[in-house]
Amino acid sequence: MNSNLFDSFQLGSNNLDNRVVMAPMTRLRADGTIPTQLMAEYYAQRATAGLIITECTMISPLSQGYMNVPGIYNEEQIQGWKLVTNAVHAQGGKIFLQIWHSGRVAHSALLNGEKPVAPSAIAATGQLHTPIGKVEIETPHALETSEISEIIAQFRQATVNAKQAGFDGVELHGAFGYLIDQFLQDGSNQRQDKYGGSIENRARFLLEVVEAVTQVWRGDCIGIKLSPSNTFYGMVDSDPQATFSYVIKALNNFNLAYIHLMEANEVDLKTRQVIDPVLPIFRPLYQGNIITNGGYNKETGNSAIASGNAELVSYGRPYLANPDLVKRFVANAPLNEPDPRTFYGRGDTENAKVGYTDYSFL
Ligand SMILES: Cc1cc2nc3c(=O)[nH]c(=O)nc-3n(C[C@H](O)[C@H](O)[C@H](O)COP(=O)(O)O)c2cc1C
Image (cartoon, rainbow, N blue to C red):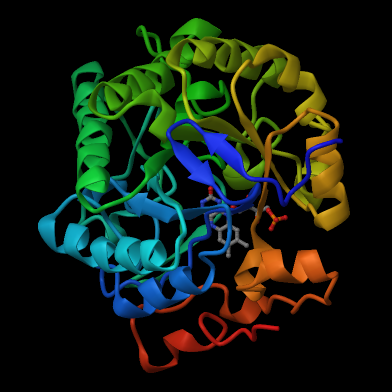
């Protein structure tokens, strides 16, 4: 019989009750940069997922792209995250922390007056909310070669801290136009040193980060999210199939828990010609586990698993609105609709619960 979403799965050293994964979602409800009791409640409500991947989390003060995103670089943040991991584990769930550097998707108003950093001084397209209001994204400072190793060390330390905070693993945010992705794609990386130019050079930063984090935690507790067809924040590559094929093949060497691979969304498909579908192109190149993501429902998720193209399926918006998504899938019950007006909060305020912990259970 074919496998389906409700079969258990051995993901490296973590045994998952099912193959339904909660995709990482930024909700901007931290108290400054500190995870809160309310965040613990939100994640614990969703603990029947086979695996929860948290919202993206800053590895350093300079990795910040939004207000009220949590961090994992100081003791208070580690203590805050312990509320979350304890609450999820008490419900029998598993949880990975998504660690993140926003790179050029930032503004000095978020960075204590310092300029955002990136592989090259090429601005992302778009606007950001900052303490001084909504602003155009700034042109970043191109990292010196010597500054790059500091950021790699921050990813390593964030992984150590995540382990200390009680997580079951970490996911590197290599997708969606943030720093790792900025190094990878030639629209944002026009460096002349060993981190730019050839695909091998552009992939060097990502692979050095993977190498660093797998030195402090077993590879099978580390995942990475990639988005070969993403156009968000002005991302573009002259040959995404070649670029991502190189990276995905190289990742075979690390015995990772998984690659989390995003499909194109409606905006990507409208913006320009992108790889679509992503999964069948890259599956044959990777021997480890793949979590597929993007626009799935129960039926298409089951088909992805049955086809052998993916081991696990992640759900973003359906999980945001349905804390008991697994139960609803099993029962073929109707799903709550997500409300985009409350996707992003403004910290730990009075109304932080609205559209966060108040979606109904069956
Ligand atoms: C409110 C919201 C916040 C998101 N934040 C993140 C994030 O922090 N990290 C990330 O990798 N993806 C983020 N995503 C993307 C989701 O993980 C997922 O890739 C996307 O929603 C597509 O899956 P879906 O069609 O099941 O919603 C976010 C999506 C939403 C809706």
